[in-house]
Length: 332
Image 1 (cartoon, rainbow, N blue to C red):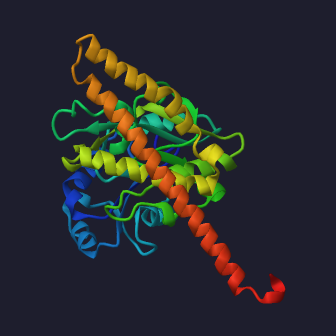
Image 2: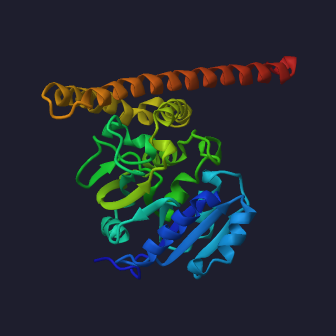
Image 3: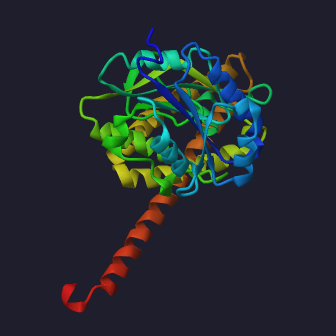
């Protein structure tokens, strides 16, 4: 087993609200009982002086490196602050409302035995507030920030990782730069794709290096009551589509939407068929509701993508028109 002394790991947690205070303490406590302990735990507070003050005086956070994000407000700025101050050879990211399994870091570190691996991420399982909603399809677990039905079930090179459970060798940030604040989440905003854009950008630039998905490196992600609702499902699907359009403009639609094309062509049709079969055979009468949710989610996400594409096109046209107007006549 790779030890934390071989490859010291800095675990970076970004926090922005006191509403997740209990979750933050639980995440830190779980990190302290890892089979392979982290070299350091870095908590970055994003533009919330009250939360920073509370964390500074919390005995359960003694020994944690506490930072205040002084850069752009939002998750991207907080992540970049963590990268700038962390001292480990491996930088791992964990959401403040996620609980890692005891062997989480050990499983991630196993991936780095291969020098070709420049990044590794794992599975994210939903912690529902009660029973899983029977209408909620597993194919759409990404709505609540989790891995979904259709992702690999064995270690495999991938093009992208999910921010709740991802890690990188430090040189990854030399190759790809940092997270883009203009497409990152700010507060409760649902628009977010900075982790996807960053890992695709890294994938494009890392040559023969590998981003590895390790499903055995598991964390559990808390789902609040509000996120288990149909209203949130609809809003998050639209926001995801809009964000994907923004992200595709930055990394190119061929690479930016490669996983989405396979997801729409393979994963979603299988999910619809499975739900209908569950209802028809009598195994689960709610199967048809899951099939309907898949179709609705696809349509809403598509509408979000079209909206994001249109906004991007109009913005480009506006900037080009402004440039032409500002240029001296002889330079046009």
